[in-house]
Image 1 (cartoon, rainbow, N blue to C red):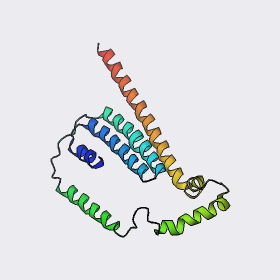
Image 2: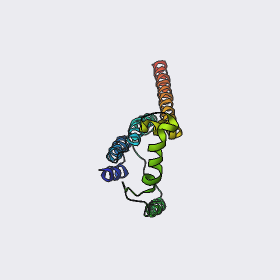
Image 3: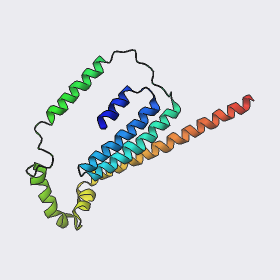
Length: 176
């Protein structure tokens, strides 16, 4: 479904449809992350990717055109760059351990330290809370900052749109 949604986004020229399909893509990505037991990342993807990004893009659409303008340039160079980047990323993952491999370094080195030392280091009995709030505190703070910044941007965008519509209404009243 992710591939079908991505291909539909690429082939569509209606910008509103693209924004909505991008939100669907983010929700599907969140579902994939939930199935991989990465619920915290799935929550962030759903909130930022499907929620705030979609609202920001809809606000942007209110200020721009509804249809994509046809490009006069050849898509060969961007296609080449994307293909090479994808090949490099795939090559970079070839030596990674399999998903859920009990002999992976994250399972043999990091996880036992977290399980054994978290109560002593953080003095919180819940290991998940200790990891998210203390060991990954800066990461969680970063995610919170992203959501907060996106929320502020939405508020600024909405207030600018409201002012623009009020000015347009005033001009129409003066003309009549």
